[in-house]
Length: 420
Image 1 (cartoon, helix red, strand yellow):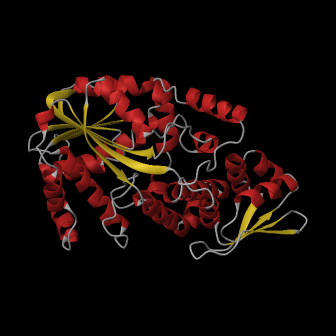
Image 2 (cartoon, one colour):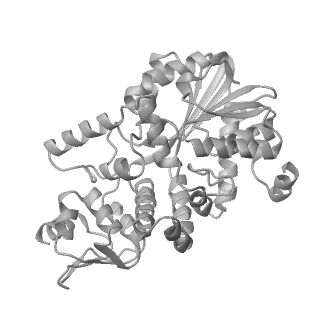
């Protein structure tokens, strides 16, 4: 316990943390702050403290999953927020691995994990997205948007915020009726179907998870639009164009930096001369980094969250004009907070679907992610790319006009029923 005790005394200055070791001895850290609830943790065996201290990011997650670390007061979200609050992005150093050898090892491992050739990309997608359909129904919104929502007001429901996110993206796509749109990494089809319904466009959605594509096709058939909104189990590298618009939401995180050149080259090839691409992805406020080992192992194998510089530099090399960049700062934190709440509410059913260890893993993932977006160095980037500078109007007013016309209003439920 001495090593973990030393680490916690260095890190935890704000917020109240109490740790009880396997012999019942109590250790206290920090001081009260209004933003954080007190947290009390119990370690259930002699090796748990060292397992956490030797590699805190992996060790804490595994100890919680395995029941070796039990949160007795507060919950794992409170613990994650407390840890990240004490190492915010704004403070140099943060929670980076200590020592040059460890940092180099983490960078090399992360880089190797990002080599996503086609077969590996499909396996990684299936690992993440071929989980039981019911799991996602339990914590996502009604349209299954598994990406950052857009909270025009923090009091808005998740459903409204996800609808508004689609309108926000649509404003940047500058759509016209009859256009051909490619949705790379289309998820469960909600954005593709929404764009068709709201703007009368034809959409092709591609993804690598078989169950996602099967569900997308079911939705399109049920809506009677399968002739205009099509979905294919296909790698984007195999798609043939041209398309007037390309949208990708939550895709770039799965590419890996070695594949950025091929991605931008392919997208340029697929776009018409006056085409527009809009990317929405998790991103880093600072420079390039690495994906932590726990996330790579348990949640997003092959994943990497890019810095803005990495996206812009590749666009420049492929003569794609970066016409608009927006940083969504707190939006994903609010989204993840709601996903965590809904996950906790569905605990009994999730444990029945999987087991207790899976449930705790999912809790830890959502809690850690929220902490990273609330206090850490994570943000969401929305980037608009053009092949030709005259593809959009001179000012950004068109974006606001379009999105305001399609934001969910007081009569949204009637609109949804009419669309069905």
